[in-house]
Image (cartoon, rainbow over all chains, first blue to last red; front, side):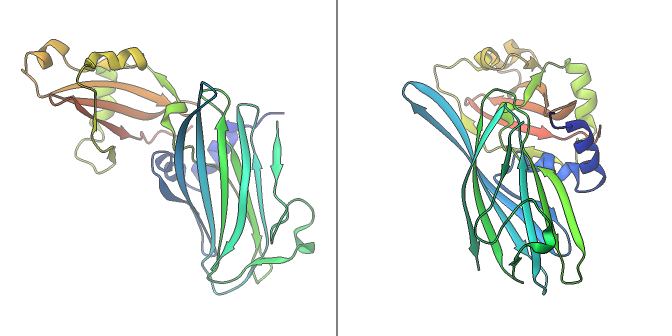
Amino acid sequence: MGIDYYSQLQQMSKGQNLRRFKTSNFKDRSLILEDEHLQVGFKSKAIYETQEGQFRIFLRLTLYFGNKGDERLSNVEIEYEGDESTDYKQLSLQALR
Amino acid sequence: MKVLTISNLAYKLYGNPRKLEPTTEPGYQTKQELMLIPMSAPFNLVSMNVGYVTADGLYNRYKMFLPTSLLKFVQFKRISPDNFSKLWRQFKDSNSIYNTAPLKLARNFPPLAVKHYMRALTDLNDYYDFLAQKVEEHKMCCVAILMLHEDYLLKLHIRADLSFIWRVAIPNKTP
């Protein structure tokens, strides 16, 4: 079963702000989600390289999950979904002060 | 469909959230790095689900797409100059047009050759007027489809010194 992009876009346009997402596509750093507790921002860098004669393009994406409030957030879950058109590798996950 | 889950440090995925350990302390931030490698162009976006429980026991969950930051991978579509001008007009004098920093074309690169690499581009003014220096800039346009419809209006301005900028506007249309 593939991802239902149409319903996801509809959901985003009602909730999270479709415009924020679209704008974030041509910024190298931006917020993609903010509510009273959690703030999710990103930095991204396109990497162009030639390896064994083949030109490859990567997108290095750093996501920041910040607790904005005075209370501890528990049971934080992050899940990714993609399909065969994109390969993605998790590089690291680390807590910052 | 591939599904990637994360399970290290303080994060765990899947299962009953109530059984998991607390994670993010007030004022703290967690950083995660991902590498996205498109296998084809354009590619479907990767979506991310984020969920957490507040101190009051309230469970919040969001679903969003990860930004690609690469308009290079969206699909470009040709648009007639008239239709483009109609759409672009709504952004005129507004601050919702985004401009890239000027980039310089090589001196031996004829500006019109840009169309060879981006075939969806359509001239907005006469190229020969630009060559004859009757106009200061040569302008071209196209639209970009992120997934479903015309998500971005793109305008390319090429100046006499062979520098160029992209201007981007986002129509307010939602699916």
